[in-house]
Image (cartoon, rainbow, N blue to C red; front, side):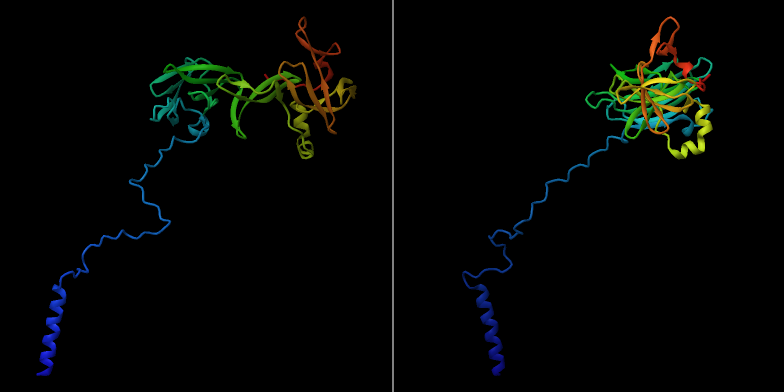
Length: 307
């Protein structure tokens, strides 16, 4: 009986405490501010939209024969937003062997080039980041590896031909280089760097032959001589070394390292590394270049001229 009264007393006590004035409901919401980490940043109201890629990184290079083979007459070279309206468009070629023309189209715009139908390659790039337009360089073989590079761009919405360079443009070592034919000591191919929307060369010097290594001389001496890369003197050749007058002896081998495009100065290098400067003078009557009054061709006996 005693345990009954004790249990009843505990029940009454619990009910009285729950109903007592001023008692707080432990489940009720408090007025205290929520506790946060001291250094935490509030989450953004919305997630930022991912930045849309502008397209493949320029420059882009297309080679006809690598992409389609020798028999192709049409195809797509690039997919790119050439007009910068936010939508990529196909940049295509169409060759007409009968008319001997090459037609290039960018989206709805096209232009026909009358160089020939022997398309070689193309480069899509931005020659001048300060200008709003992009550049498309189209390389066409005019005849017998005589390449012509034509710059195309959009002008007032129309695909327009710009500067024409007689040589084969290529992207190498992060630069736009053009291989150009050069006739002074026979037929040679030189190289210059070009840039800007107007396709201007960075120098009036054209690089002709890299330094010949001992290995090249040992393994390819006959070929270097046969094709006129390594020139053989038939007579003593007047020149200038280290600012003083000098001579390259008869029966010597030299190669032309570089020359001015106007052919007024050239650097010949002997096999032992001596740099000799020569300054040809143009004779308008005979249409030849001369050194000390003697035709340049008479100083060498193995000049090579391409057909």
